Image (tube, rainbow over all chains, first blue to last red; front, side):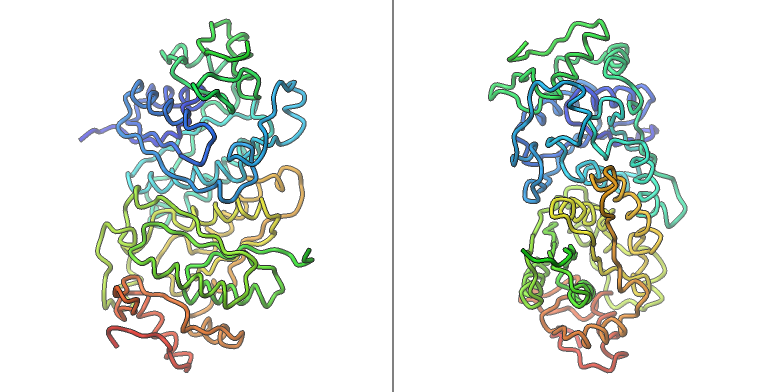
Length: 232
Length: 232
């Protein structure tokens, strides 16, 4: 038996969640990584999440099927086109079509269920309020409200046992700061995947919001970008 | 186009959720019923939910696959035995093994996603704090916290548009009061299903917590119980 505290880490196989996982590992948690198959156009994310789980030595990696494509309402579940080559101004103007309704709420709810079964005290999620492109469920006030609800939802809450903490170590960091932090912690970003619209072979498009933010992050961090982009 | 406000109603095909749906219908909502396939022992629930959706004339009935059996930790997803013939004292003593970790949180999260896509203002859930057998996620303080979180999670929350209301019309009613209310509203309880451990043919066991509470409810309401029980 390990004496380490357990943490669930939500993992998309992307840059942010992988950095959040490296931070959890550095803090000494035994890590349980959780990914979701949700009718993404890009199952490539799941391959990246598996590589990351292996590279960071997680205790268990679980993939949950999430049936949100049936509900619709997002470019990421197949209804709408992924926007390309937008300026940062445009990204911040409105909630983008890549927003998946209630996605983080659904993901955190599964993490909460697993945390309760494992007796984990912490759930790490790589949300970011700087480069978040206007997603409502990446804001600090949302995360605080989820944590409060989580502590009323569970046995721990009723029995007055350990509290569940929703941990968002990246929430106030720029993309460049995230990349610097992960690089310090030894993250190999070449195994991560950020693109909303990759080629069938897995190359990043280089033009969606996620690729543009990733490129800019490496540029500003002064760290070479190991990503293979279709459009430089 | 209908001018009615839309409501999502969580439906298990059971007595409580069916009564909640009848109340939503009486209030004039256009109803979207939502059920979950979550590795229950009893897919019989889903048949009941479909019968109820038809009987109450819902606009759309959606069944979502929820992969919580993979997470484990409950008698209702197959890990543990369903307790039988317990006294009410015993039921209230502790959180029972039929508790599914974070279940209502996961269910309400999907409802929230669908509400956002449809533009529905209300989500009805038939939770009950009287006969709730100690489930943490049936308490009023939990529901309030979920509602608060929901309004920060969504576009509506960011854009200051319509608020999401989590409606729990049964929360302070006894089982007998629920049955009286539903009967007034014309609910045919013979099409509903409550048992945690039905026979392969669909008969209610008559001995699990859910059957015992249902029997007692009809008895106290002074209304004949239309349920076919294996054990009278």
